[in-house]
Image 1 (tube, rainbow, N blue to C red):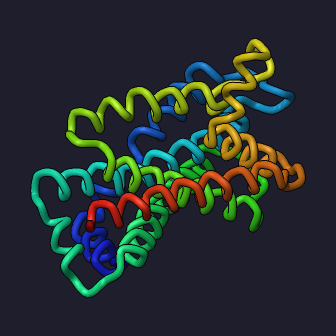
Image 2 (cartoon, one colour; image 1 turned 90 degrees about the vertical axis):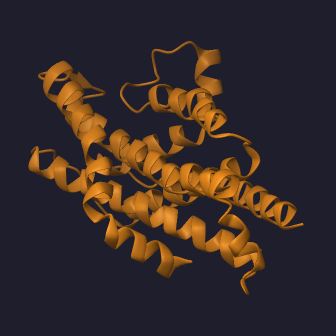
Length: 239
């Protein structure tokens, strides 16, 4: 499974790189240079504040889209998903391979944003915990992409799922602004969303603070649940 995704990545290297770069780059230009010039949030420049959120957002979108859209098309329209069902590979290894491949794509997108942010002159503290949170965030949303691709019954509904699930997380999970001024009830709801903990964890580490174990444990918990749901759906489709 991983080799197949690697071959596909090499064939479409520039398309994948461009799609991973253009959206976050526009966010950085619009929110960093435009809205955020001279603005401080929580005692730090807005660019320093927003970049970890953009990294979390990029790993989320890239990991999810690398799995969800294509797998849904292969299952419903191309019917190539049936080839994996009859091939000598277990559904566990199929699911695990897909999730790891999607996570690697998400990490690649996140690393691109890190490089671009340094070119923009953003100064952040990077360590192993920062990379670990990126990996967990990528695995989590790759698992979500697997699950969504196997339960949604049309390509149009995939778009609606993104509208109602992915888009709210993009703008509400502390990616572009602090949650401190939000109403308390809204904060509690937002804290239930996984991207919130990825954004806050990455931002805290980037600003030189200690690793928050709650962020990491919640991301691991979300990943385990979503992966098991996706794996269960793989077996149901196989049956």
